[in-house]
Image (cartoon, rainbow, N blue to C red; front, side, top):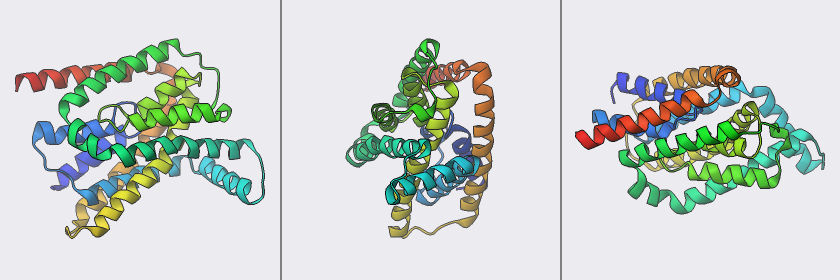
Length: 267
């Protein structure tokens, strides 16, 4: 992997991980369209570390409060709004863990293709548009119930299909359930933390068991660039969301899906 490829892929990962446009789709496309080689396990771990550092760093106060309340609820029996939200985030993580455990190989073999990405970009983009238009925008994330958490968790699990977008699917479901746009985004970002930790740990285990030599320059580039771009992306997305809603991302998804379909059909 060249330094340019490392920079470009890390930038793509950082900018798309938390936007409703699918980071997995954008990381698959360079190999499909430009013929770039697979970035490898070590680089996957690096960009996961970078995006994890970004979301934890941006929401550092919320993360500290939620973790403290979570452990106090276990060891001291303390009940609070933060403890409840922490438990709902944990509950929402379960469907993706189960889905990944049983469906990962099937997805890798049958669904990791540009045609699937084109279809899911369009389908889930239209779904996001429909839900955003109809959204009641009544609740914040602290009103999350176990039933809501499970539905959002199921949406996160389905987002393992390339092109769906984890943040897009979870925000779509949250909006459908009545969250405000800001609350849907915050809950989606916070629930990304345990899933990124689990995914990064799984990839890290594979890296430890692999004999492939690690090229440290691209790895460090991946961590730094994905961290900076993801942090900036979270900041500006939350600021723009109240002004423009989801429509720009819907348009982008549909344009990406249609453009990719045309490219595949004519190449």
